[in-house]
Image (cartoon, rainbow, N blue to C red):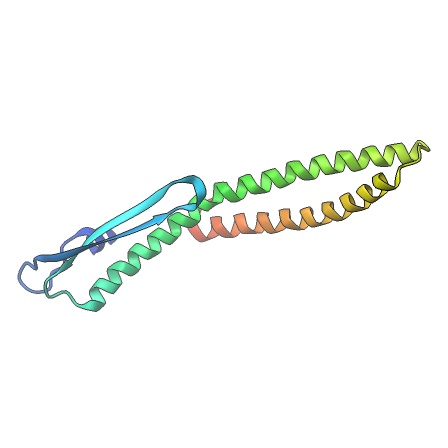
Length: 145
């Protein structure tokens, strides 16, 4: 029995079971506004185990779609961090050039330099974590990239 007949097809329990109720499973897929929704029926004489099995399949599909939808969000967040890192490096390089040219930096500028150096280290770590999260998400859903 394929997955779609398991999800949407009639369950053969006895002689042609009749639907006695229905259910809907819906999930918001990240902050993109996308969502996925599945509907199904409860059948007369259907076992609880059969219903749980069908719902488990739906949950698995919903979780995969949710993870798949998160990939572009993770990539965008990582790209934003990379751009911020580039900007911080440019500002830091400007301070370094001025200092090497013999210009006296104010105490505020020296403090900004130290803070930028620390921020750059932290952002590099965040970018690495973001890259790993993207790779894990792709691996989880079987996507390449």
